[in-house]
Length: 295
Ligand code: GUN
Picture 1: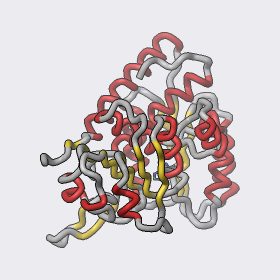
Picture 2: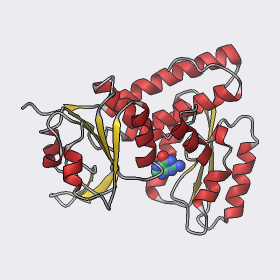
Picture 3: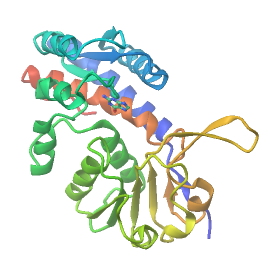
Picture 4: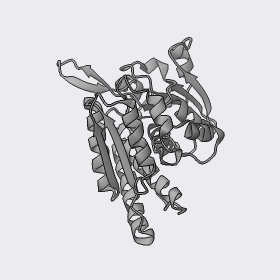
């Protein structure tokens, strides 16, 4: 059998960002509205610093306003909550993102719960999680949204598919399961206590791997012709001793069996920021009673 098609997340994300840029131009011209995204970063985690820098660059490239709050690693929970409150009340800020993980002295859930749900462009607030689960309009978590957009690039209707999501986090596993249910998939959420995970996985027409374990999903776990979406980003040492990025999926083995697969890097990763920008445009439109331009 021919190897599976590559789902080019980098290209899809670039298209999405271009389309977002056009929507922003329209909003500026017709409503004098410039969407604004505020990012709060506490501490100096290197991966978080890279994400935040890229978010800032792409926000500005799409014509939006970017506000960055970089705080010392020892910042108190009260000080972070005070900044969130200020951003909640700032009319130029339509989206607020508090970069995770936060240092140990700060209760992340308390901070996320303090964000105005209407500005919660990460979609992590319980109000947005609840709206997603009940099918009400919601701000939807960015990585899950990116996964579904990529799956629909190769299968425009996911209806009736058996989907297996590996991982049950609030950031990816649970929300992507809700989105796939909305797409009329039959969804199984597998996790570390699942019995015979390879066998469960072999039933899937669509596999979403979001566990954070390098190359855990092997080729013989994949049903021939299945679609494989790899959310993992793991830094490992390659055969040459240099560090490299791999997903949660053993790429070469799974590509040989799948009909389509996302690479790491260049698959789901670039979609996350593009979806964040889309959510910011949505929040800005909702805050001003404007119908969002087509994106
Ligand atoms: N850290 C890693 N990914 C994310 C994300 O999507 N949102 C936030 N807030 N923090 C993250």
